[in-house]
Amino acid sequence: MKTFIGGIGCFWDETKYDGIKGILSTECGYCGGDDPNVTYKAVCGGDTGHIEVVKVQYDENILSYEDMVRLFFKLHDSTQKNRQGTYVGIQYRSEIFYNNDNEKNTAEKILKEMNEKLDGKVTTKISKEKNYCKAEGYHQKYEKNKSLKFG
Image (cartoon, rainbow, N blue to C red; front, side, top):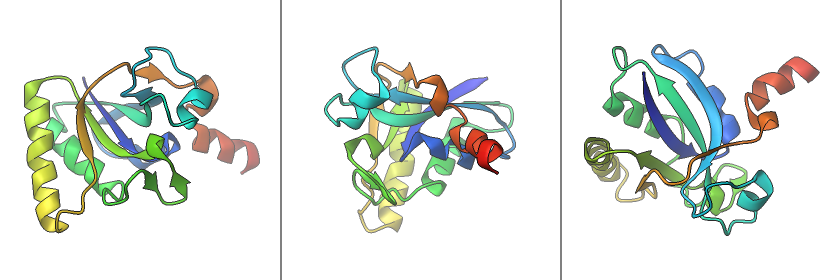
């Protein structure tokens, strides 16, 4: 089992990973800021450096890290700076967090390919994983739980 952490906008978009063969689980969280323990309220203030991310556990026998990076780019609009759709703010930026040089090199290679396809308009950042924190319980599987509650 391997882990991929990426910001595709609002972390409630974790549902975009549902049903994809090789995806074992998802978790909403925050990553990239200086504080190892942040809250939703603090992150929404826009000054913690953290963004909303989805931490994805995947089966490396089915999906490679490269597959995960390519999937990341398919699941959101990487040309929107500090936003995704109606979600606006620095905490919704497009960003991939890596853990080692192989992951960094793979992400940079695919980012370059995407920039060539999209005339240099990709705003995605690639950063070393820093201070990942799991989001509060009520954010986990939010969209799924909301539809069960109000469905």
